[in-house]
Amino acid sequence: MTLILGIESSCDETAAAVVADGRQILSNVVASQINLHAKYGGVVPELASREHLRQIVPVVREALELAGLSLNDLDAIAVTRGPGLIGSLLVGVTYGKVLAMSAGKPLIPVNHLEGHVHAVLLEAHLAAREPALPAVCLIVSGGHTVLYDVHAAASDGGRVTQFSYRRIGQTRDDAAGEAYDKVAKLLALGFPGGPVIDQLATGAGKDALAASNAIRFGRVKMKGNPYDFSFSGLKTAVLYYVRAHPELAPEIEARAQALREGRRKVAELLPLCTPQALALLVSFQNAVVDELVSRTLAAAEESTARSILVSGGVAANSQLRRTFESEAGKRGLDVFFPSRALSTDNAAMIAAAAYPRFLAGERASLDLNAEASLPLA
Ligand code: KG4
Ligand code: ZN
Image 1 (cartoon, rainbow, N blue to C red):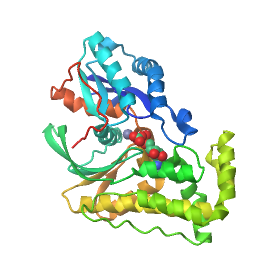
Image 2 (cartoon, rainbow, N blue to C red):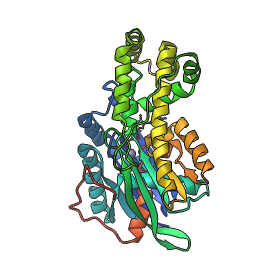
Image 3 (cartoon, rainbow, N blue to C red):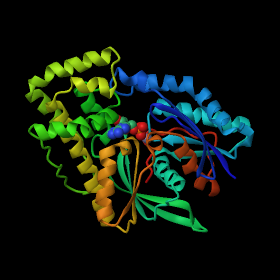
Image 4 (cartoon, rainbow, N blue to C red):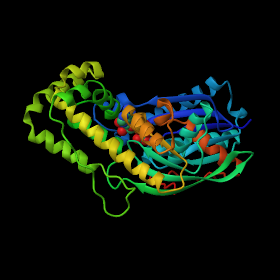
């Protein structure tokens, strides 16, 4: 059995996990910084790196303890090298190097985006339902919205031992999660915005939309690559709508006050939302989901893809999941998501992504550096 300790610190989650043979999660610890960044309505890079420094040692220790292992038992240490916030990445990379050097273990550098692909594969394995390759993989989070073709580059006994990636599309401006977070900030719904908007839009929002005049945000027309995404126009359209409707100002102020007082739960914010605001959220979410699903399906249909993989924080979105499932089903494509816990940043996906690279003999030297814009392909 190959035991790999994964370390992830690319954004605002300090995470460590132990995964056996790239498939079996023995521990998966995530220390989230959401409360730290919530009052700023977004991740503050300097605060994030400082918090990673505080958390990294206890998080790694806990991951080893939960797995019932010591450093000596490990076969390798895997660490996220990029992309991400440079100060945050450096904490994980430096600590990974220190551990690898002191324990005499190989160090495997992992691309965070490849980690998100493996989050889906980990989950699929847990559910005993492996995706057929090639696949189109949408990675959609607060920092990324990117579409890859995923191929099996080598297999052994039916199991893929090496993957290859080709980028086929990406956002030209904001990431989808960033659009959720910015709209939530504009409407005083707290941070991160995705889960709150998801719940408001799929719950009470549906009735509100039916009861009010639906706001329709048009689909983005894009020249060039049809698999590129865009979300900044939608974000601006929401901003213009709010400016043109000053009747929304009192409820926005009431929610801002609630957030200042620590009332951040959906159940506490919902009574402070008018049907008009809820309808706006439904329209916004419809547009985001349509943009993501339609471009991903088009890419899958025009390629040899046999499955669709969806990963990253926004993959937790309930409407996105439902829409992908029904639309992909109509086209005879299987769609795979990670569980909610594996959708957002975690280190199990990093340890899983490292496994094929470990088998292929990839090792980092101790001059490994973090790379904020590291591409996957
Ligand atoms: O993958 P992740 O944890 O971190 C990044 O690498 O960015 O993703 C966080 C992002 C945030 O923008 C958050 O608002 C969004 O994922 N998110 C969601 C949902 N849950 C998290 N967006 C829409 N619906 C959700 N249920
Ligand atoms: Zn991520």
